[in-house]
Length: 134
Image 1 (tube, rainbow, N blue to C red):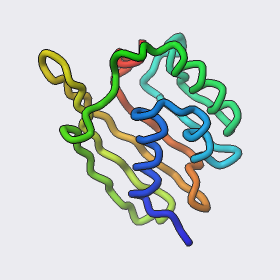
Image 2 (cartoon, rainbow, N blue to C red; image 1 turned 90 degrees about the horizontal axis):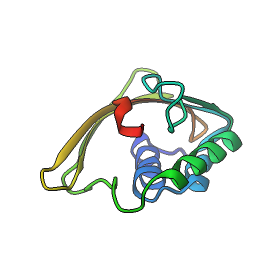
Image 3 (tube, rainbow, N blue to C red; image 1 turned 90 degrees about the vertical axis):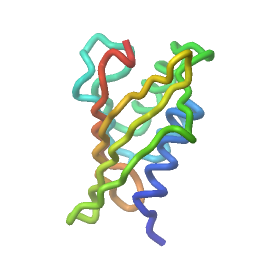
Image 4 (cartoon, rainbow, N blue to C red; image 1 turned 60 degrees about the horizontal axis):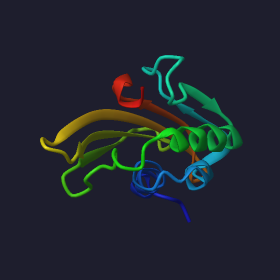
């Protein structure tokens, strides 16, 4: 049974942004998977490029531990996304507007490009404003 882009995307968002579960997030990747954030400076807390499931697990666990527990959780009801299915069955693109609640709602727009293999993420490029993870 194949996994749909919708399912992969929703699992990634849940494991990452919503629950900050590095183990669950890492399990979404192939053993040799790559998590890449090309716009993030090399010295940022968020890893710019991480290769391999176990390295993704380690890097994201370290990143999540550094984050404060009081903020940064998106408002799912206000946030929006569109998945773009490509001619390549292994590639889809997520166009996202994430809303964070506050005195004034803050919207963060980003794009993610997924390359999947056998229902797992083989390569994810996450394009977002570097200031979000300083």
